[in-house]
Length: 142
Ligand SMILES: [Zn+2]
Ligand SMILES: [Zn+2]
Image (cartoon, rainbow, N blue to C red; front, side):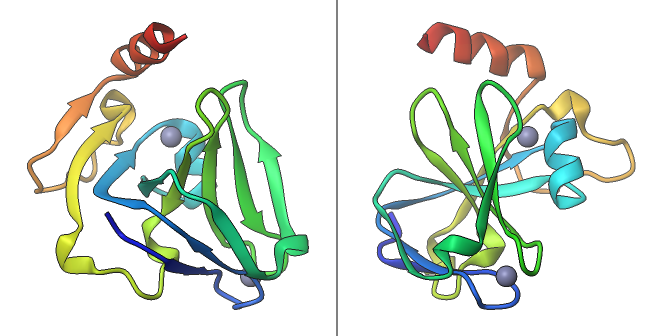
């Protein structure tokens, strides 16, 4: 677990802290993530309290589907985190953090692997899930 991590957008107008961020890194290859960040979404699961230091009013939340919303800095456009509507968890983009204990981070999982473009592939050994497998897991939780 990563504790008291500082998230910051590109223009530094938005800064927040989050308690309890997972060490396990996930990549999502779905079409929405590709459009949102220009490639796979690389995110850490956050379950703790999100506390804004500054710029909360600049954060725009886009409701991208019935399952979740995506929050970004409306000044510089940095995408920040995805919020899951069914369990309230955050999926925080790994690149926005300033003080991660990066030696503890482990790339463990890729989802929507069947939507990944063929022109690249990660060398990391991960557990991979197709779109259908992800949908089955979500359906099982309801
Ligand atoms: Zn910004
Ligand atoms: Zn995605």
